Amino acid sequence: MTLLRLLRCGFAWTGIVFLAGCAGSSQDGTILRGDLKNTGVYKTNAVYNPKAVKWRFKTNGWVRSTPTLQDDALYFGSLSGAFYSVDIHTAEIVWEQKTGKVGSSAAIAGNTIYFGSVDNNLYALDRVTGEEKWRFETGGRISSTPAVKGGKVYFGSTDGKFYEVDGASGVQNWVFRTDNGISASPAIANGTVYIGSWDGYVYAIDRKTGEEKWRYQTDNLVSASPAIFKNMVFLGSLDGSLYALDAKSGEQIWQYNTKDQIVASPAVYNKVVYFGSKDGIFYALDAFSGEEIWLFRTHYPVEASPVVAQGIIYFTSSDGMMYALDAEYGNELWRYDTDDRIYAEPLISDGVIYYTSKDGYIYGLQ
Image 1 (tube, one colour):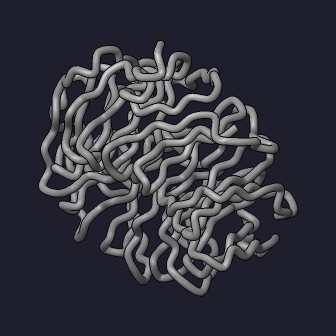
Image 2: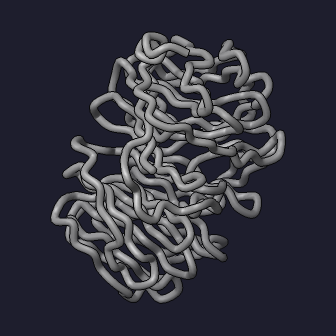
């Protein structure tokens, strides 16, 4: 491969990175946040002391979502209105598909990729060829990353509806209506789908029937995804509080108040809940009691969700800084200046951090 070819593809390549995907069954999808419970924990090699950006890929627009990895390819979309598959070994574009502006990360099940777009459609593409299999139109933008379980795809839209569609055909099975838009991604556990809405509620929905099991009201919009641990649901609200709810009944277990809005999802690791707030503080709380374990001050809003790998917490703040903290004590291990604002959570795999930026690039930091 020539340098000219690399530049045409948008890659600046300085090293070879091997990355193995973490596929589930053919009917359950590979998604972000580590699992369908949205714990944010990745079972992979951590990044202990990053030296430099090993590669970067340039799109023609802002990338607001996190890339998804499967086998030897990286999958992601851009607000330029394109979705990409990029070969990790060769740094070449495998395929590029024109779509609407891509606002969500992708879920993968078998050879199908599912993602939402600003043009109100959920797309299903062939993972090998990039060809469109089907699209499902809603009444609003889709920034909710879909979840795939049992061959069914679950996602929300800013039209205030939450959908289950068949993964093979794109035919709607059921729809659940809230009173405002949905930008949060769902969590799934024990036959129940959990979702937050801009109407201020978090909902528990029967996965088979689409019927409501319970709802819990916060004091402002819920734009972040819930996380499930044991028999508890954890979620933040724009009212500045992190809530712990009983997963079966929806009853509040505890509530922790920060000084500003919470717009990102929490991570749960070793019985501790980790999350950031727009107050510029990153928090670690006991999952069962809600008691504060430690705090880390960034002095800038934390608007992206944290992820965990091998006892290290990774997150970014609005000043463009990426942090790595020891999960047990909150000690800073390192920080990296990304030079631009980051809204999406990083992705960790085999000792590499993948992150997207407002500058239109996707980076691999090792």
